[in-house]
Image (tube, rainbow, N blue to C red; front, top):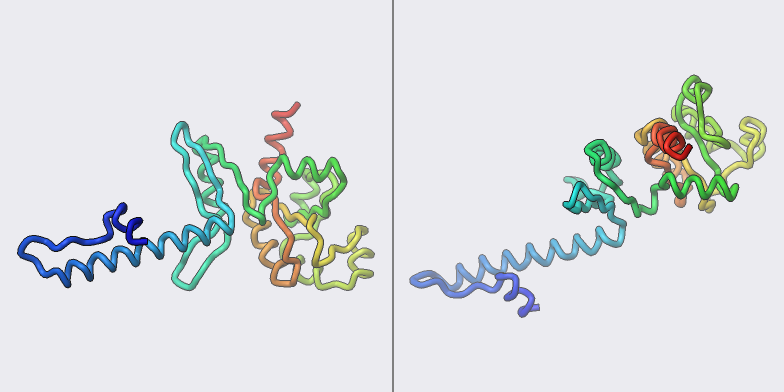
Length: 208
């Protein structure tokens, strides 16, 4: 530990004409800060990172942020901002489904896809197999009995341990809120398609 600290310049030396105790105190304070940073970095890596590249400059975005009151969930706005700047953003978050993953899940028919946009948006165009449950109705819908859910939406009701539950909206904001609602209700393995219908349409056009 001391050798690491020394290599990083955190072990103080007595300054000429100075107080060695003050120098030591300052150095220990810096060492404490460095160790705290390392611990937070380790915690961040265990939660998933979002690496991106803008030109030749790699960028790494943590999937959560440390705020005044604790940890917060992923920041889709920042990732979206990077994409708008022409960056390539690869997401490894356990809570996010990429376009490629979504295509695979749809191809394998191994997905429960819920579109949380409004009905008029859904009717104007939607991802195949997506079931429309507007965000404002989501919580009460997920609280329905399995029989009522199937009767209302004509699909198998999701179960709390299902790993193939995916929410999506237009661009990721509402689906992120939907994910929070679902997880609060116990659907701990649910995910959301962050790119949303906007990205879906763009990717489908490029694929043709």
